[in-house]
Length: 160
Image 1 (cartoon, rainbow, N blue to C red):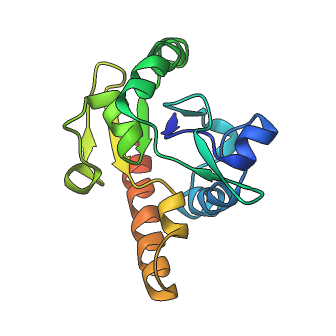
Image 2 (tube, rainbow, N blue to C red; image 1 turned 180 degrees about the vertical axis):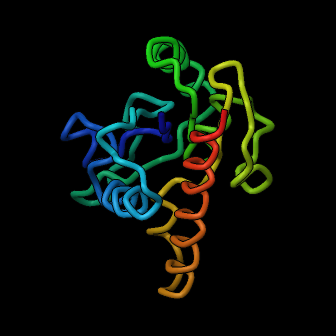
């Protein structure tokens, strides 16, 4: 099971998670890491798209802790139904929804953790962060790191 932050503009319109530009990056990374997207449950910690208008565009705004808390019952219901053996949290909002406000992706990235929701949890960046890298070299480096984190998840899923 993979948990992201919140739907983006494309996801909000389509009504499905990870179908926009970040989803395309994630699809490629999942394939490289040996993960079949069709066998993975995808969701978000926050269930609504928080945005502000900028011209004709809807620009993403980070959800606050109140919004994460308000959506927590839905996330917990999904976790109870799916009962994942492995959970991958994508970004700080997803990590904080699972572990609390002190969670930091920079500190826990690529490690196999555990929580009350899953025996194994791997934290990594949200694929949208790759889109915000300042240059091609950074995008390439961070993409490789993202795939490496997903490979940690694959390995952890195969271990008993």
